[in-house]
Length: 219
Image (cartoon, rainbow, N blue to C red; front, side, top):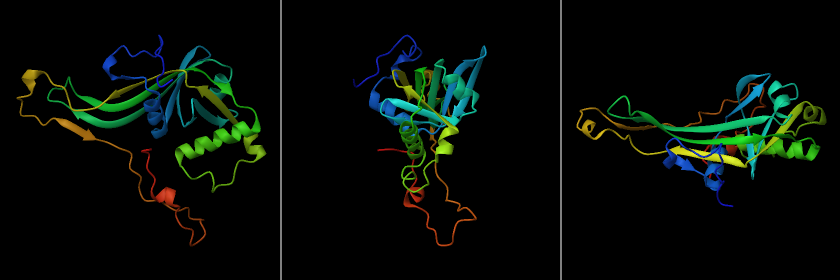
């Protein structure tokens, strides 16, 4: 299917014209993002935790220490809500009321399952590493068996999913367009700085091209 079917939990009701259910559009948002926020209930209390993630096909992978309370809780199959937001710009209107932001966001509902087999965990960690820094996995030492045992990996299927997107200029009240106030969009983006080499790096070790040309925008 080319689109995610809206459900009672994922249908966008507030400003429905901003709703996006297209599968490829959702993929692009997830693949550009770096941090997700995971919401769940633990011991009767609501909890929201920011963390990294990776996507392969219709699965989002989460990982962390085997001692993580969040991962232990999610591994029990509790309901979870995962969000990813990309902040694209400040929308400056002529009135305070109509200020906004341009953004792209994804909301995922579901239940995560443990990835327990060795090859499955290795593949998920490769996906996670390549999501953060494409090209990195082939250069680094892979996880040892001890490190794999100390790591929990969860798989969250992309089934109940929707995106919401705002683009474009401010929308002011008609009578406010004559006000002598600057209005427009201030674009914002994630811009890499210059790489800083580890002080214990052997002399002459070059910065990899994938680091020098790092860019979150994906084809």
